[in-house]
Amino acid sequence: GDWLRFPYESTENLHIVPEVDCCRVITDHCVEILQRVPPATAALLRIGSIEPSAMLLDASDAFDSGSPSSDEAARAITKTGMLEEAIETCTDAATREYDVGMQKRLLRAAS
Image (cartoon, rainbow, N blue to C red; front, side, top):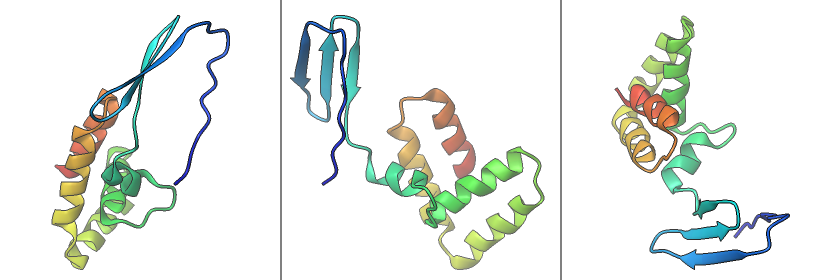
């Protein structure tokens, strides 16, 4: 798989505590949670994603910004018969998201 490097500069003490679904990183200055990106979130927010959930989120964002293309995008998802899957993926991603603003955005798309 892929890996990333997380520098913790100007930190004397660094502890990694394993949890059931993540690792807790404890430093002199903060406590952070490090976990894998859930598959639903990865599929939804991947750059250039053509997943139905990503198209639904784009349609919702376009609707919120007042763009007339939002209706066309929503109809395209409905025509493919993938609307239910798109709603489920947006809801699943929202339940695993820590950022409240992003949760609201995903749930607004699902509604």
